[in-house]
Image 1 (cartoon, rainbow, N blue to C red):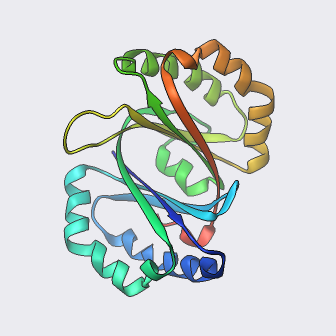
Image 2: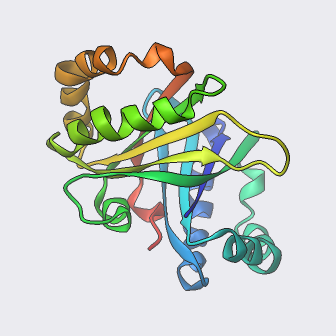
Length: 214
C-alpha cells in the first residue's frame, strides 16, 4: 500500500479558502486504486494543514498522477491558498492493530490522526520493526480509543531512506492524550527507542469531516 503524506503552510486569511478547495478532492472516490484520504489542521500549529492518502499500489498511484491529478488541482485552485507544500510517498511495511478490523475502517471512523515522522539509524530497520511488532503493536491494540494504523517506509527513486512514518487513528484527542499521559513514557523506555530512532517529530491532527474521502 502506498501512503501519501502532505503538509501545507496556510496563512490565516486563507484557511477558509483552503478548506473549501480541499473538498474538491472528493473526486478521488471514483479513481481506480484509491484507498481513502483524510486531512485536517495540526493541533500544535493551526496554520499547517495535513493530508494522508492511501493507494492500493504504486502503478495505480502513478496512473492517477498522470491522468487525473492536475485536473483536480486546476479545478480547486487550491495552489493559491497555501504558501508552501511538502509531499512524501511511503510504502506500508507493518499494520498497527486497533479496535477497527482494517486500516480503511480506521481511516473512515477516526477523528484524530497521530503521525510520528521518524529517522532511524543506518542498519537499524530489523530492530525498529521487531520493537514495533513486539512492544508497540500489543500496547496499541490494548489502548482504548486507538483504531489502527500503519508503519511505512519512505519511497525514493534512488538510494535508500531511513525515514519512516508511524500513523495511528484515534476516536478523539482525549483518548490519545490519556495514552500519552499514562502509557507512552513507559513504552518508550521499554522499547529503548534511542537505539533505533535518531530523530522523531510527532504531529496530532484534528480531522475535518469534509476533507474525508472514502
